[in-house]
Length: 493
Image (cartoon, rainbow, N blue to C red):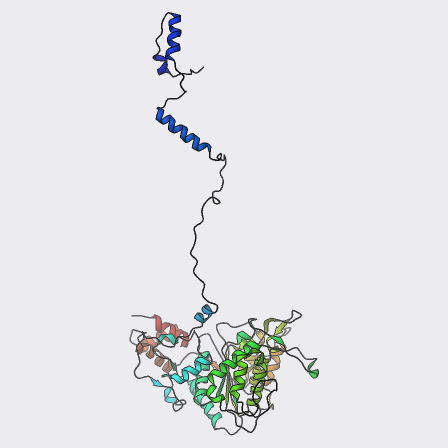
């Protein structure tokens, strides 16, 4: 049994043989004490601590989460940029680099030296007036390395000279000659640059230029569309659709790039009465400006404009260049859906059908342009869609270019038991007048002129010899211009 007092206190007691005295002493000497020892101040503090602890909630015997009791830190969230600013930053085009060296011997590209064959393999500069027009029609792209040099310049290759000679032939022809080109090639082979060069030469010769910088916008379900009202004789055909905002964007590019030419053109035909234009005094600029300002007038304004450019009349019309990039996105079903939730084919859109009908026109059909011109369409190599029917169409064009007859055994045909796209098969009947331009690597002369421009601009800081040029061409896949540009800005001593 344990004692109620400690051994130290027990030893201090005086034990007497007199029981009465021991009881008295015990009664006097024993004082009520607690079972533990502490100073009076410490005991007071302990009582305060107990009183404070008594106000707290009883502690849990089990481990619990403390996240609800922790104060969350306030984070300073930055203000988001305005709507459209990030998209504008991604698509921003920089045409000059003040850190690059200025090339004093750089010659400008003009109408006089447009077809000079001695310029093959040289870099020629673009002047300010052409830059404004090219920027307005969205000819520049972010993948074309314009921000590397002091001023914009382009490489004149053999395909560029051939394109310029064909433009001169159209200018000197008396009839309504229309040249059709479909440009293909590997990734970074210069397809979009060739289209830009074609638009530049068209501006030099005072042509009307219509450009579609990205054909994918017509089929990726990012713009408004509406069914086109059909006539009684078209009730059995497939439903067509218009795209008002994309038509408005096309007219806006045409207005800013061709404003000086459009304001000199008068009407040859009567335009629809619901268009708010003055009969007799209005010009084609007023018509295009109306469609560019309001998307509700975009489609009827485009129809009236195309009638003026395609049908002859009292007033002469300029020649027209139509450039389309990434045309292979138009060779299959789109991302749009009809009211019955059925997939809409790309050829059911009126603008797509119209532009493809110009390129793949059937033999014996009327000229698509009133005064001739050029159709310059190109495919994409970095974002190629998987449409086997379009691949078959390209193989047939290559076979025709090699002189293979369509009735020959080796002529490309659809694979057995396959389901080719009927819309694309209908285009194969108009392949006769389409020229297939396949871009490959640059020649040795063109590669040398291109890399020397990097050296003179201060980007390539090493001497260019035959050995180093051969090394660059080997690393660039045989002179692919886009790969040469990567090596020119990356290689240092």
